[in-house]
Amino acid sequence: RARFHYHWATGSTNADALALARDELPRIVVAEYQHAGRGRRGRQWQSPFAANLYLSVRFPLARGFSALGGLSLAVGVAVAEVLVAAVPGLDVGLKWPNDLLVGQAKLGGILVELAGEMDGQVDVVIGVGINGRMTASQAEQIDQRWTDLASHARQMPDRTALCGDLLSSVLAMLATFSERGFVPFMARFDQYDLCCGRSVRVQAGDQQEEGVARGVTEDGALRLQTANGERLLHGGEVSLRIQ
Ligand code: ATP
Image (cartoon, rainbow, N blue to C red; front, side):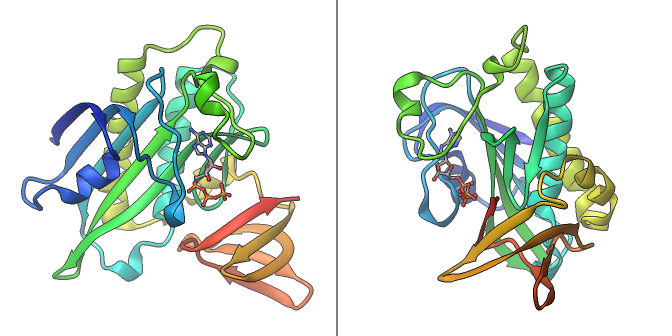
């Protein structure tokens, strides 16, 4: 059971979820439009009035901060599985640590933020944005390749049902993650992993590193094979390009 907040328009569903009181969790925030949709590191998520989805789930995990590795990957699995079921043949993949891509184009994004930590539990907000049918004017603002479900679906899935299925899947995933962490999602992540075996360039702050991606560890770190041996990279501040 989760309390549901619906907004016609808002700044950011993640910001709204973070601002809620910490009682009566989990809570869900959904909006039709975000005028300040968030990406990582202060980036913007373009969120026009369109057949897109903008949703956030606030959930108290029975785990400490140090056990959060792989959370955004597990969200990716939960979302990708629903999208594939809703749009037959959709060739969606996950780009570590937080993007949903079709080919090289971004279909959706995931943003995990922390609401707080208490008594060894951590209160997280999971934001998911999926492009259903992007509007041309807003698309001009996106500075990388993007796509939407409408470009790949013979028949568009019912948007309300899709939203409900995404929320159920994310909530079920969170219940499992809360107990057992990323491990139950690892093999499923591998099925969608777009980077494994590919040459990638990784940027963390002003440091750059190149290598071959070799999958992920039990705590969601990327295994990067470099000229100097294997390096483990943790999500957070890292940006990755497939070469
Ligand atoms: P990168 O995608 O470069 O690895 P990131 O993962 O930090 O960076 P996010 O925070 O996930 O990026 O998303 C923000 C970026 O996604 C924006 O800077 C923009 O390039 C792109 N973007 C913004 N809105 C959309 C959208 N609706 N659909 C697809 N891509 C978008």
